[in-house]
Length: 257
Image 1 (cartoon, one colour):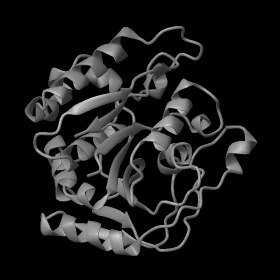
Image 2 (cartoon, rainbow, N blue to C red):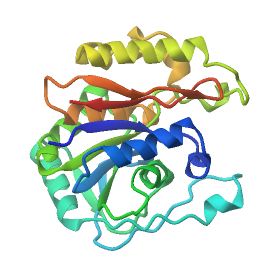
Image 3 (cartoon, rainbow, N blue to C red):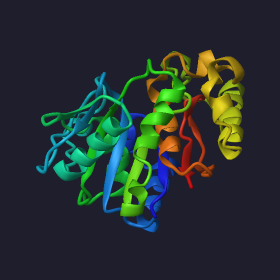
């Protein structure tokens, strides 16, 4: 059985920097049970209905950012897709009444290739990339994950890639410590995940401290709910890593089992 995870993908600089969080991702990839394949929901691909990458060829690498050092734009992560797993993913979603479609052309965006390159640098694990819709209610995000429940029994790792606190206007380069409001928001999330309190999580916008500041737009948070939904009904969130960059960019990573 392979657990589902929420992984913070952070700044694109994570692909080239040497820091504590990059080292954590590398160690995680080395020590975890090697998955047969990865289904990854990325905050950087939005669509309605749900879009699922479908290909057996190596992906193109999308450099969906600007103003970074030139070396970032030279990086390629040529993982292959899996049309068979893509078909299974679409079928599972549709059986639960969730509209989905296959996409045979999109490459891997940095929400996918940056953390995967740190975890699995050989790019030899098939990847199926899946879009998110930040405008769906939290309950529907859980349902998307629930539709994929059981893939872990086939050694398929479901990853939600985003960031729990993601407000680019509040970043403070060189900040010596995390912002208290960011810590408070993550503390609340962690508590609800450890208690498997889905009802409270569905109401995070009104219940969580500093929710509007931490999550001005939900595309980076909803992959967490999808990953949590894909775990079993008794699964709880276990913190694997927690740190912050520039005061408030959260690198919280959680395993659900």
